[in-house]
Image (cartoon, rainbow, N blue to C red; front, side, top):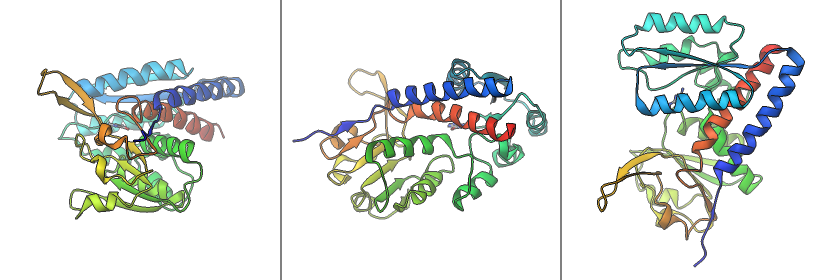
Length: 290
Ligand code: GUN
């Protein structure tokens, strides 16, 4: 039995961060200022707090300015919109990221719509999603762009390949499908209402799993020789020792004997998200500097 390759997303992300840091140094030389990333965190969700702390550290490590705006859960939507308006006009700020999810009393779509599309380093604004969908230059969501980078590094030209994206979220599934289409893949999106998902996944040369359900994609669903990108980060508790661990959306151990290559969880897609965010911030800074 052959075993597939484990894609080292951690190493790839470190390489990308190094390239961004070189680009930042050149930007500072050219313009006399650092690119700036503003991160807005509402509330105290522990997972979000950890992400935001890591983002801040890596932003500084890349030579950029990190600005953090922490607001209580009780903040009103109008006050949050005012903060975004301020950041839109703040010359130090090239990228604005509002950490999601937001508290339920705040309309997420309204908040995203308030961000200047030129500073929308998450690529969530409809101007950027529309540009991506129509093949125009856009700021592209970080996680799916990171997945494409890993796929191209592994497979080279993706043209003509069958790609199945499992999951249809605005953050990952939909932009992932748009990016794969732009790479000339034949793209299918499978989701919770899809009939016979196993046979659809089995057609794919490329499987991207982004549903947020622990080990939902089974090994036997995978066509021999397919490449699998696992976006899931799910905490599960082991019945044997009662300890928590993190698993992806793919049953990795089963899938390993089917795949050409697969991203592990953790250490696959996860580290790519922040690395691409830094890249997007540098891209936005250059666009603003003209
Ligand atoms: N929450 C989980 N992932 C993301 C992301 O990529 N961007 C933002 N803003 N919030 C998130």
